[in-house]
Length: 71
Image (cartoon, rainbow, N blue to C red; front, side, top):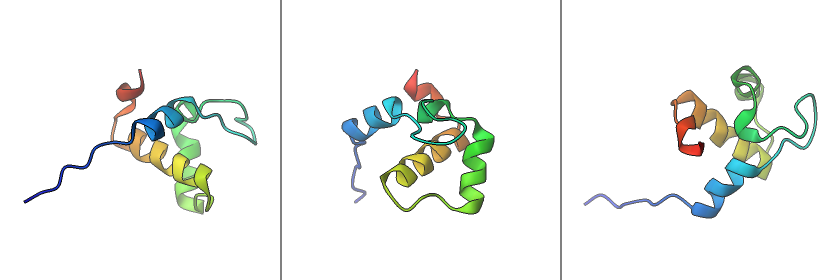
């Protein structure tokens, strides 16, 4: 029997509203970061903190064409 995994509503909202805290894209919503920037992070390694987890999630969302979920 497969267990149903429900998305975390608060985490989803955080991904939709969190802003980049540093660098060239400081102030930009994570969901609005250019895909090439997220690819760079995926190749170099995401930060090992909450921001890194969020960036990795945004990367996976964009990689799988699921941005429409945030519109």
